[in-house]
Amino acid sequence: MGQFQGLWRDTKIVWIVFVSIIFAFSIFVSWYYLLLLPCLPVSFVYFAFIRYDDEGNEKGDFT
Image (cartoon, rainbow, N blue to C red; front, side, top):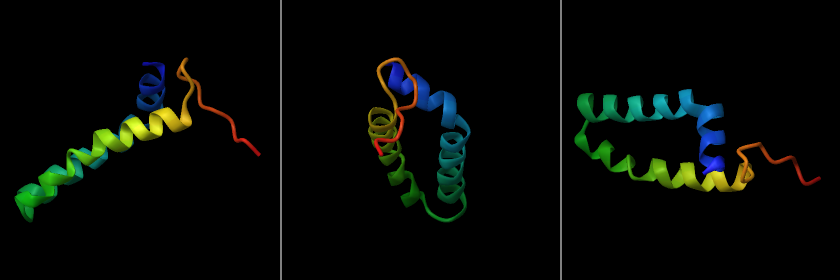
């Protein structure tokens, strides 16, 4: 759970902008853009596990 909290803490504005853009496109262009909404949680979970440790701290580079 720490991974999700860490990612949300660092990138919440970006995710809010993504959701806002999807809703704006679905209202003004076509409702098909709503099909992008299920992609956002998948991306969120992927980046949370890749970039953050169990305590919610960002992992360092492995170089």
